[in-house]
Image 1 (cartoon, each protein chain N blue to C red):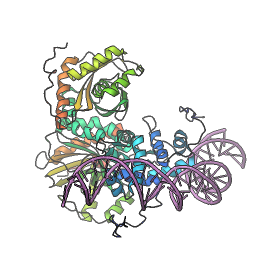
Image 2 (image 1 turned 60 degrees about the vertical axis):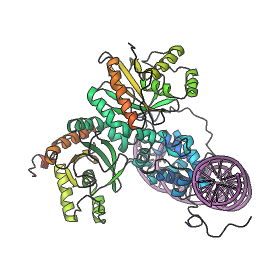
Image 3 (image 1 turned 180 degrees about the vertical axis):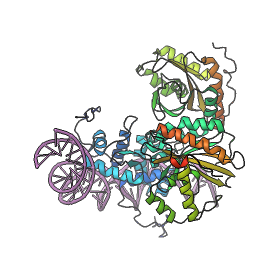
Length: 276
Length: 276
DNA sequence: CAATACCATTCCAACCAATGAAAGATGCCT
DNA sequence: AGGCATCTTTCATTGGTTGGAATGGTATTG
């Protein structure tokens, strides 16, 4: 039986061997080959996707394995190692916020029993740092460690609204990648939405795929008053109304912010909002 | 001007410290400098601790930053980056088990409101993969991403008991590093304990520092029947008695095992255990 | 305000680790 | 047994890597 070996999805980026590329870049490109769908890879797969000869890949991989960045399975395949995970757990914007936020997320999760998400921004996307879900919860679009677009998710909107002006403008100018299941938002409305998010401390997104859900998100601030993360709750559309969820989400986000050293002075324009 | 004095100000760590070391090893040694206590470091700190000249460190760090393995703060210091955390989240033994176990851990946590831990073994130590704690919980010894000794923790005993015979023997032969707050266990007793752990599926440890606690742990098996992780609960000594916790911990661990594909046949010698 | 100390960054010529084609070793399928 | 693909080792060549020295910047001290 001829197993379709590997429908090489990576475009043949030219045979040009990456000669002259710094060694570190090559090693890192090996790590970058791993993804949600590729968690265990053979030597040749790694070499092919990283675009380097097998002997070169083998030599680099050997060093990575020796250190613990990669681990070798019994069948010869390689996976990301615990040692790398260990170092990565020191990432302030990764496990850092998570560590502080987790107890509060748990409280929120326990009360609502719905998905609770924590995300930070990395360049032009949101990276999911934590997700609490009950075993019987609705299907959810993103996994921990995965990336989500800024413009079409609740956490994304919060992070975008909290980014510096320059970045926001650059993002708004870019073509709106349309995501299935989310209504596309024209630029004018998007600008108003971001403004609203800043004013109210709440972002809300309704999506129809992979399941009909409503997400409500709120920003988390650090001691300097910058938005460092976003917290959200995802519920099946039609269950708990968003305006009921908002206070709980806001309160939780503020609790985390306070723990991060944010002086939660009452934002003047949040005291009253008869929105809705 | 004049020639600087002969007394070299830099610690004479050998004239040619690490010349000839592979580049990757150097880069990785930079990552290894980061620790729980060192989460943000300057260039010179990194260079010093990694044992390399500043220009060399700078060059390597530049590549790491470009890729996202490190991030540079406004004050010039470097921290572990989100990109690295992202790749690391693909580690099967890191976030892998965690992803599957988390909902069950949450259930256990919600019911008991005590620390719930998840750990895997890496060489001769246990690595803490997850920890759920309430805000008002008792002080706990280990943090997520940290390491714990095998012989003096409940999860460690479970992992040790589940390791291959060869590794166990090697570990037993090693000198028992004495940890503060935990009673030292002589080899004979330790062997009996490990045997008990295998038989009953439960390990228990009482410790007095940093606070008086009791830990109860149970193994998590994969589809091949190997112990891949350990789950434990940590409660203040004198609160809930261990024999009450044990069934809950065992049940949770088995639920996770089942989800990992472990055929949870009833181990013949676990059916009854009147262990007082 | 000058002197001092430390840190970050750039430069460059000597050097050696990195490279990858080739061939051998191993395992799998026909 | 033969064909095929993957993994591994070897080795002469070479270009990336190296780190002392110098420069600019910043915080601290006298």
